[in-house]
Image (cartoon, helix red, strand yellow):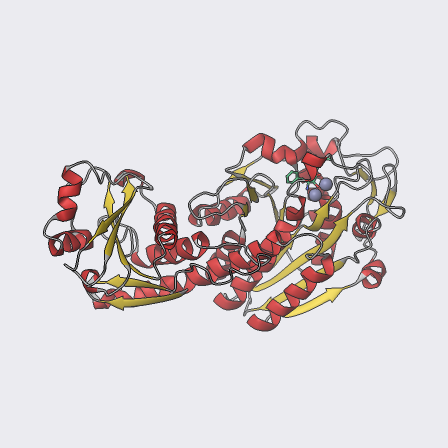
Length: 501
Ligand code: BES
Ligand code: ZN
Ligand code: ZN
């Protein structure tokens, strides 16, 4: 879909539908909605008076214009209560109105920037949220459906602003929003891809292709190279699969003088059967999405390459399949990590922390002094938080708060979780330095984080457990069913803010 920003009168756009909005409780619409109402001889005010249009959040009303203006139809999108309005509602209302238009078969639509009038939002921010909502909301994964390739897609979105001097801010916002949304959709595509096709090698190939397109340096390590580095934990997980593991490394080199060298690490388990501690059928459902953290890191690196912050950032994704098999690791095995610490395998299904432990050691060996990892790490995080918040952990609360703030800005909520030495005690092993799963499942998200913390050591580090939010069974405003592509926008926004700080 093409997005164009232009100055003019939205009521005069010759498109299939124009989109205007209304706050709940408003009876005399102003701004663009008022102008369209006047062009329609008061039709919108009449529908409001009759109770047909209430302005409730998610309410979409289709009004035909019968030749009174060039556009055949007007969509009045409800914004909900003015006091609850924010950037995330801009994303949602944009997504919902455009999905409504697409479902009606419209090809060209014009919209105003929701929230930049009486909504009181910053124009550039609102325009960014609008572009995000549009591209995230219209996303569909149809790669494997034959014979309906371009069916029913919106072709053009015009963002119309009355005042010409405001167009430039809108264009800037749209540029950033487009990069963040398209990078999220890139991640969603990787996650939604079936696991027979999205193997570790395929994930590395996709990363290399993307790196080429946006100008990132890409290095991919194979099993032999990882063995030379001593990545015994990662290779232990890989041992049960016929699909070869890969360590994907993407480097972005902005001018980072005086700034931390940031490493983004993402769990890239392309399918998690649980290994010898095999999951149940129900437990395996959605486990093609166990590389969502890795996909988030690849998506964030894509966005960073295009947004060009003054910072050095490296994306590191251990891509591995966790399978049972003759060569698979067993419960009670002991592996040696790249850091030198040994780990007793008490549960082969606690594999994410094992591949991340070696990825973190690699990041530190490469001179990185700030680490953020993203992982679908534990079912316990979902049990604790339900489907709305990711779990955030850190030993440095200030750094975690900065990541949480970036998440709030992008509509990706993160809740801070406790992490103290008491939990580390639960991860000590009788036969090795650590065990990979605590004997008691209680507090499973925290004990997993405590395990990772041992590998972060003194290096500033944040761990995001996205198991609660990475996959959706139901469609919501700007998230389809399946992969949500979370944390691409949060990580990229965090990097932009770090560069600017
Ligand atoms: N990939 C799973 C965690 C998961 C579960 C993500 C559900 C998304 C939805 C992870 O590898 C795992 O199996 N964790 C175990 C850890 C346990 C064995 C200590 C879990 O959560 O049960
Ligand atoms: Zn597992
Ligand atoms: Zn897993």
